Length: 271
Image 1 (cartoon, rainbow, N blue to C red):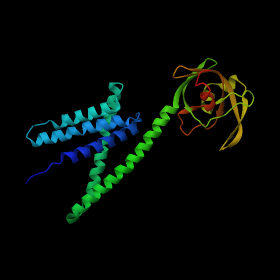
Image 2: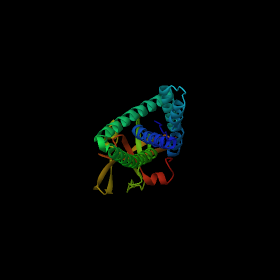
Image 3: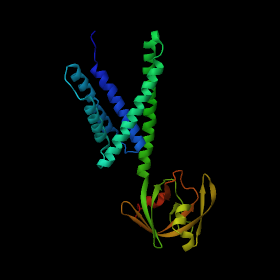
Image 4: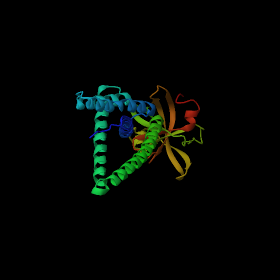
């Protein structure tokens, strides 16, 4: 019996699966988005199994396991461009785990939809349609999730706060919605978490200045303190600035400081 091998369809399937797995792994590891590089890497590496299959059918002995590992390693390396061997191994290990999980889910779905004997072709077609639909939904979800991660990555910076001999590195969010201004001096006011103010010992060292605020959540007064120095990761600094204390500044617990939109617009971090 003659067996037909459709190389073009096999390449397309491998290309889609490579790209899909790159998306999932990037989302899981919070890797920077580079869709063009992912597409090119997926397209090139999708040719590996096609060549291996053709070579095997031609009687050429190909070390399947070795070529599969090499393909995965090249795919991960070209797609994510790791900074070092440790990061590369972490990316490769997570990619393999995601691949194994995805393969297991596909085999499970295939087993469910393949039951029926006479209707095996019908179930196979249904399995294919369901798989395509699920891939489409997951691609849409991953694209949105990665876009949000990329936006957050660009909006969050590391800031070193220095006050009264204390130094602490925190994550700060550049929020365009923060327009808090001191009514007494007219200067922009940053917002810090209550935990950060306590760890810096602000209440012990300074008397608070009450800053009125008005937001969607309500209005009231915030205790503000004047801090000595904030140094940003790009080397710029802000000296002698006001920071208001809020009980809940962000849903992300890692964020301990919110930068002021007006302060950034009037000349970046430097002051």
